[in-house]
Length: 112
Image (cartoon, rainbow, N blue to C red; front, side, top):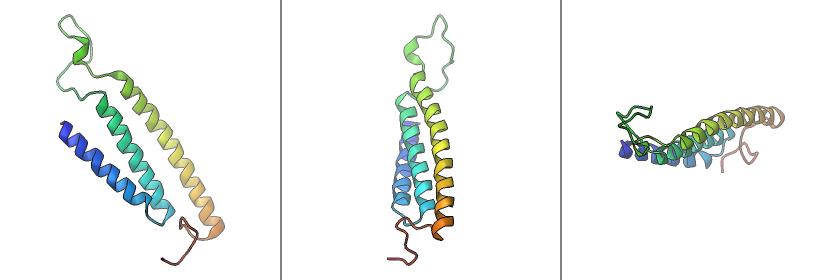
């Protein structure tokens, strides 16, 4: 399971960085979102991936066998903040496109 999670984090990070380097604003926003999701998965993975363990403490279950809840709370907060900033970026993108007439990051219409 850890191998699948690390491969997913690597693929999302590389796709996010590739999209951030694109010339259009919408692609940059999607790249930032992918990069933030990759960081969220990384933080979630640091908390421990546990399977077939009950989530409630009992007499025969040690606290070390459970996943750490702090990274899960941090990821949940980061998801909410990331959604809000993505919505803000999209509104700024639409306003910028309405004012300038294009959606290139550097403001040019022609390719380099």
